[in-house]
Length: 386
Ligand code: AMP
Image 1: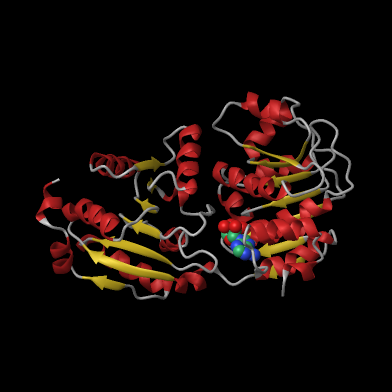
Image 2 (image 1 turned 90 degrees about the vertical axis):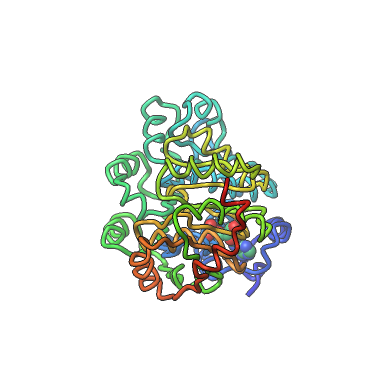
């Protein structure tokens, strides 16, 4: 199947070509025609499946002929659970909106930054991508009205419910017109999602894309048996030896993320940390630099293990194991996205052995191991001293 058989206008096909999207992913094949026909959708799909473009493209096409919204009255509302995802989704809208022969301004609004700039930018916005809390603030201060919304998207709805946004979502829904198209995306089909589905969706097309867990086959995994004090030297050795130009390192605590970053910088390896104790401005800047390829190493806590898409990220390193096996799969899933292979390297101390066994069992994959003797040989004494 090709994009041209999905009844997308020529200018959209051109922009797909420019982005090197050669053929639609399965979710796009199914969702795009249905969204164009203004049907409701329940998409069970993870990040990496191409779900964002599956709603962004037809929503942009559907905007044709719709009058530029009167001021501060967006016609599409996308609700997302995290600030980073808000920025990412709005960026996809912006990327494809450029090719449209009519105006379709999008804006991301999220907490952690000043509300003033967002209020000012709200003029003539057609597509508003928002985290629930900030949207309610903006509604409270009359900076935006939702009475013209004809399309609602809930992206990562399961995560929104896990993070306890249910009440806020309900409040937001009360501001929306009853007649509208609803698109609901979730990584899993939990009882929560079934509930939301029953109140929100009208005879939806249900699309279920195979779980991300099954596509970890694309990722080359290696585990290294290490002593605690070898982690730093091994990390530096691997970054240099494998000529890593873009690597995402996961730690399990904010403190460790800062320590690892500092140590790398002392060794002239350009690194920044990203975690929940930073300001949103710092988080956004670090992630942007990393995505653009301006920053070589990003050291993150599990804040970044879900939802965030980094195109063709070649390396992920688990400097520390996450508590949950699910998070392990999410972490390594930042690489090997779509059709690209990637490498995930995991440091395992003696204390981690039992937990790592559990992770491998849950992931249904046994990871190749570099034994400690070999690790010790790899890191020359020059590294160990630092
Ligand atoms: P998503 O699941 O929406 O986060 O998308 C995952 C990644 O796949 C993003 O980097 C997209 O740019 C990319 N992508 C989405 N659809 C296609 C496609 N049809 N061909 C190539 N890349 C795509």
